[in-house]
Image (cartoon, rainbow, N blue to C red; front, side, top):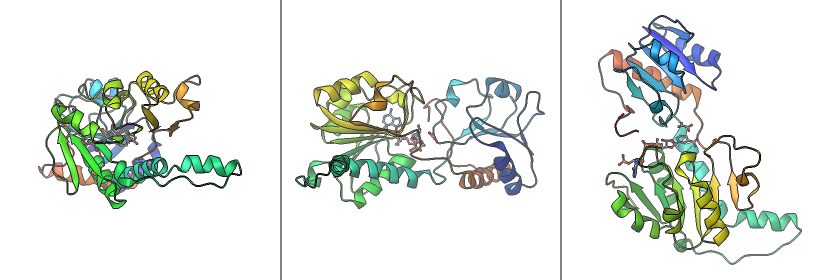
Length: 306
Ligand code: NDP
Ligand code: OXD
């Protein structure tokens, strides 16, 4: 069995060592032009040349959860496309979203500014019941985030493409129920995959339907958000602020208004990182299962886009 590694932004040596240790029966190598045909490839943002040179691949293992960039490429026709299925990401995402929600709900930025100014003063406690959180996307990450928010006794609404049932979460599904979901939520968390259906979904219409003084947490993809619409809603006071882990251009250019906006908190696409050891263990387990002819979890439906 031959496995190629070709993942932009990942240091190849530890991945190659890890894959070799997990699959000692396999020949594992970093891809280079003209590499001999392989059975499997482990990729992140691979080059089109690599995909064109390896039409026989049985599966491509993405070293992340989102496959939007991969689906823009011409893929080997019969290769299964397999996403990372949690592999340590969902707990990180739960931490990230809960801290953003709590930081806003408890006005911690305001307290921090007060302390720096030498001001010891209290704000009126907010009523949790007035701060329902809506989670867009109830998949591997969204469901975990919804569960974590419930631990802090937030009211949680959820929205997905097909109807879901999650204990304690008021679930909405499809475009037909989007407005009701938004109207019932004050803080909106986006954990949708980027597909033609979800691109630009965070625009003035959706964000404008949140309860007054709404707050946005986008940890999915920058192209979900129409950035000028966010700025306009902040300006009009319809939204109170946003935490953005992802942007249309990463990093944004120096003149981008989000860098210095007082009500936008930015992080550099770091809410749920790929953990190498967990990912290698998961990928190796799936390769073994495939070799035995067994089905594996996390296979992307190319027509659905996630
Ligand atoms: P999943 O595929 O497990 O879940 C996707 C969810 O979105 C599902 O509930 C799905 O509905 C819902 N959905 C998809 N399309 C629509 C639609 N048109 N309308 C309504 N709901 C829709 O994805 P994950 O939870 O694993 O990850 C979500 C995204 O998070 C990734 O695609 C990636 O872009 C992003 N991400 C960001 C990271 C970061 O560090 N910032 C790290 C990892 C991921 P249904 O349940 O009906 O299928
Ligand atoms: C992912 C990501 O999709 O890191 O896994 O954004």
